[in-house]
Image (cartoon, rainbow over the protein chains, first blue to last red):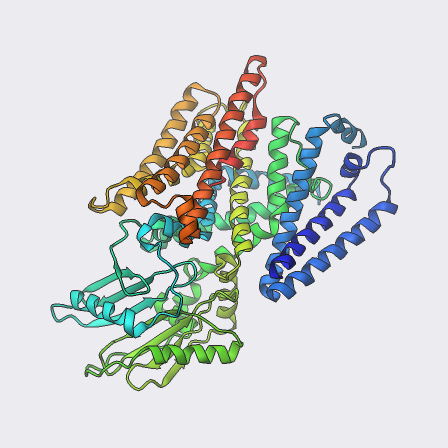
Length: 107
Length: 533
């Protein structure tokens, strides 16, 4: 049970980070493509969902490990999730080399 | 933030990194190893790879005869005994550690939970070498090492804060790592990624590290109120109890009932079963004897071990060490730094983020080296390049060489533990000299040679452990030696990553050299991977 909860903390934190990444122009273009341009219509619900994920992760972490250790676990899970997302984005960008030009045009 | 502020903070960030970066990498690397100090100790002290005691160990039946034996040896010529200390076994350290202090000097030993005395380990291990190297660089006289480490930590703090200010696109580039871009670009991306994503950890670990040594490096209060007497300050701060010996002999009570009372007291307060960390007896055999019992903090963050003081002759509870609010906060922050609480996920992530700190600083150094190559291609540049090499791959090589020496030096060698230390520093100085010589003829530090050596030494250390102790993975698994499996596994991962890095560096060189372009892309990978031990 405790292990499943811990896994949940990491999954929620990572999902939140993935949604945050989608809310950024460059990664939206990387993942969704140029045809559907990014707009505030997408960005706001994405950020809201990300915050909801992180809140869920915090609650889960605190119920699992208590307040003190739970908060440490939560912050560490956010860092781990962010690294997981950054690594996935890097690997994805290696698969499709032309995407770099697309990112450059937008900037 | 304004452009002028960014420009103003860039040079302190840069020069702090160039001057103290190497030292900080060593501190971060040794700190990361310290997370797994008990496990590395089991690996380096094979005699302590024993089964975990099933039931709580009896202090009277197991520890006391051994303590009396030690006392008899030490205090043979009429010397008086000052105190006894028993470190009880716990989940990660399955042996007892006993220490006796007398007016004629101290003595210590390790023993198994069934009372078998273990031979001296012949090594300092992680607990007496890697750990002190982390917090005081082994320079204890006059607290010099503490001051140097604290200075580096304050510089690290300044580096983190200035780094955040300098970073112009912190949110837009939050997840960005352009591996295929220009080498300088990918190096800077990796530097930013490591710094920004793990910023909470880096800030926490640096700040808490400073707070731990604050009484040493910020001694105004101690000087003013305690006339510089650090021990008196500590005793009062954590609420220690002490009383002098009476001089009349009196029999010491059995200790197990006192241990039980302490555990019941803690259990009533916390509602949990709390394990005992230490049992100490001051003035044993004297009418003024008292017993100090502390708890294990495997269930909470703080390092405050809640000492209970019992009269050694009558058994009354004399005092309880209770820190004030400031010391209580300091103990909590110290606990954040040292992860003594039982949480394997967090231990691994502290370890990995600590190594991430090494990558952060190393990529910063490499970025500087790449950027200044043309402008500073002289002595100063070479010194920084050699330092960067000696403090990244060099320190990994020295650590691995010490582990190999730990397994291969004969047990009967006199001062064996010092021979291991000599191997560590010999290899470390060797890597620095090698890097410097290499740089006189080549434009790059010897990354590839070092990566290959790291891989080779990691394999040798692993094989040496299997051959000299018979604890190969199947045996270790069957015997439940998780610590040995873990260290061997980390060595295997180190070897794999190091060989991969060496192979990539070779490929990168073959591709990049003819066209004149430099193979910085592989450079960006090396320090990260070589640090993985």
